[in-house]
Image 1 (cartoon, rainbow, N blue to C red):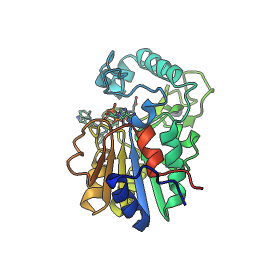
Image 2: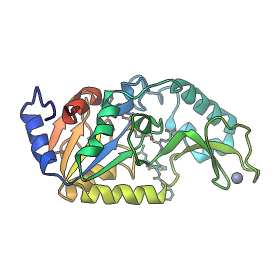
Image 3: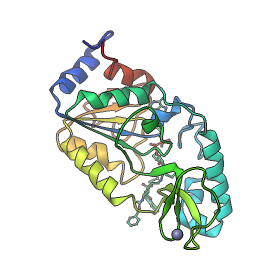
Image 4: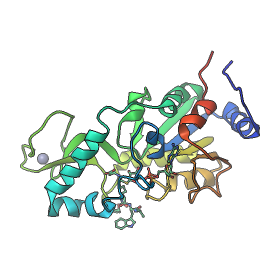
Length: 244
Ligand code: BV8
Ligand code: ZN
């Protein structure tokens, strides 16, 4: 039997729904990686603070001054080069076994969910460890360098910039998972960036038991069935404890 020590009324409600649930979907944002040392976007130590997102994370910025944008991403790759998954990532990797159907949807581009053992992660905003040709879209993994693709186009990080479409298939799968989840968790996201931020609202509309895990309020807080105010690294291992 899993360790449900320290179960208060909040966790009771979660376990009651989770025990009944056939399908679970979890939606994560930068807050889940904060405890691994990755700065969030909009927090006080946020990485946007020296730059405006619209300035750098856009195709216009890349077309106007590619070197400046690539320098910023090189700095970010530096910052996440030797980070490790934290107990929150590990708990979500364990959560897969707990449900007949489990979908992990992330806005994060740091690859930490896969590193923690999560399989089949839906990366709505891409992955900073890969490059993509800005012209023909062909991808390459980390370590391959040289600025240009064989088609002549410049390589850029394989992430979704403001004003760019999200990968259509990934978005469709995420919408489907939100609509069919019995339990939906929204963890570590300011719930400000669309269309990803539709997901918790869609799950709530479709009747899922919705949980928000975040030390601060978000636009979704009032609709969530259960709000767990605090860090994902401490709440998630309690929601998905080690078995045994
Ligand atoms: C689209 C990848 C249109 C790149 C990112 C004007 C012009 C153009 C578009 C728009 C516009 N106005 C609005 C839009 C739409 C725009 C948008 O939503 N803007 C917002 C700001 C209003 N969206 C887009 O542009 C999207 N594309 O709409 O295309 C279109 C339509 C048709 C045809 C063509 C085009 C693309 C959006 C994707 C942008 N890419 N990142 C990169 O990273 O460099 S966004 C960026 O924000 C990251 O992906 C990040 O994941 C995402 C969301 O942020 P969060 O993850 O929530 O992180 P944040 O720091 O905000 O919050 C952290 C949270 O964690 C906080 O709540 C904090 O309390 C909590 N926390 C802290 N510590 C912990 C914790 N929680 C738990 N535990 C802890 N320990
Ligand atoms: Zn190309």
